[in-house]
Length: 118
Image (cartoon, rainbow, N blue to C red; front, side, top):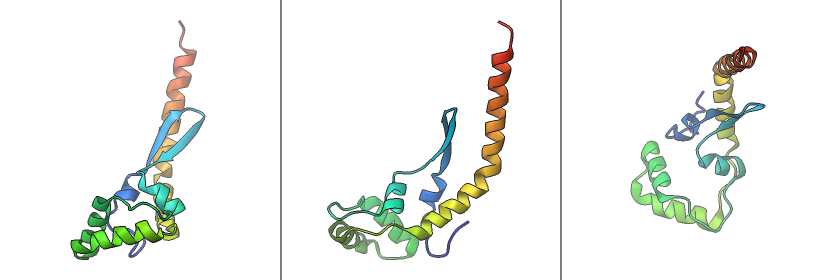
C-alpha cells in the first residue's frame, strides 16, 4: 500500500477510518493533514513545526532543517500530493471488505430491531 518515498511516517494513511454516523452514507475520515494533501497548502501560514520535525526524522533529515522547510512552505505554499492520494486510494481498496462487513452487520442489526415486536 505504500508508494515509495511518499509515506514517510505512515501517520496520515493510518488515520483513515470509516465514519458511520450517517446511515445513508459511509464517509472516510482521517487526519487534518488530508486537507493539505488533497488541496495543497496556500502560502501565508507555516505548517505545524512538529509535523515537519516528524517528517524530517522519518526521512533521515537533520531536525534543524525543519524550521527552514516549514518557513518556506509558509512563504511559497505546497502543491497537492497526488502520489499520496494514490496511497490513500490503495488503503481504501484494502479496507473495502471490512467496510462491507461492517455495513452488512449494521444493516442486519437495524433491520432486526425494526422488525422486533414491541
